[in-house]
Image (cartoon, rainbow, N blue to C red; front, side, top):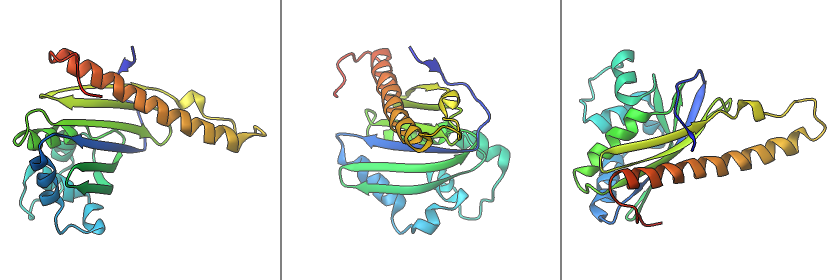
Length: 196
């Protein structure tokens, strides 16, 4: 079994979040949340924070509160694809993945559907940690691995090929960690027959 996540020093962390629900109102809630927001809006540190916690526009950044509520000292949305039956969000954050933001996203969406699933993968740019997880019925399970020792040596003749292969393997490993977490969170919550 993969190691439970540990906090390690990192730089920028990329996280991919996917929302899954049989209730179309969940996706409508996401559409409403993002309605009218430009890409530039979503790139602002406070934008998603205010949306997740329904805060007034006048609220200013407080590092302590922000880190406690979002799981990182800053976090912004790189990309979002939100449609009637699909929702995926890609974020960049500092030093760690935005665990508390994902928990809050589940809390907001569970008001519409208590069976909404929020699954995710993440990677530190230096591969100090990569991982995946899933939140369902109020419980989150997440796993990570340290891949920093797999980074190729710049002096290797096949350096570029090794990097390309490494990133392919990272993507596969993240998906496997997410799948393991998903299986475990469903099992822990009394559903051993979750849909694939």
